[in-house]
Length: 158
Image 1 (cartoon, rainbow, N blue to C red):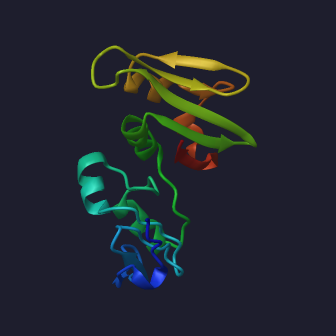
Image 2: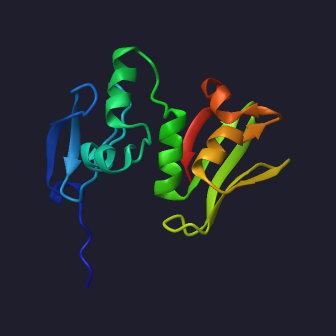
Image 3: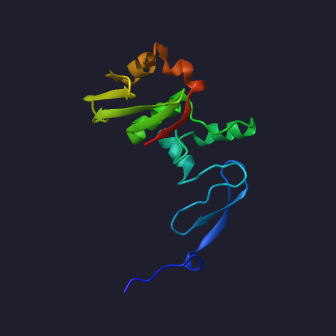
């Protein structure tokens, strides 16, 4: 017979938010509540994530970058380089631009040479052989993604 675990039986602790220091709940299963003050969502040790991958989980924006954005009163948003690092971590990414959803994904094994970076939406599909080629050439209607990144909304993993 399976036992149902109630919230009262789950061990929790109050810890400071990684960004603003506001108290958040962390439970024995490794789950963190979202910070009610700044909105930061923590999912693991983001210092390690930043050291290893240059991003955070699940917010994508790195911990140090998020702290700077918070100090400046800006919303949390991954920059273009963090987005690319997220691509190589998650293999599938999305963002919105002017009401349209764009996808970027790795096709093949990105740990070896045989992969392609595919950038697409309902209107087109572009393929690139290297990270540098994607960074320099991926575009929407002739505008490079990295040049319009300030206008991009909700960069995220799929």
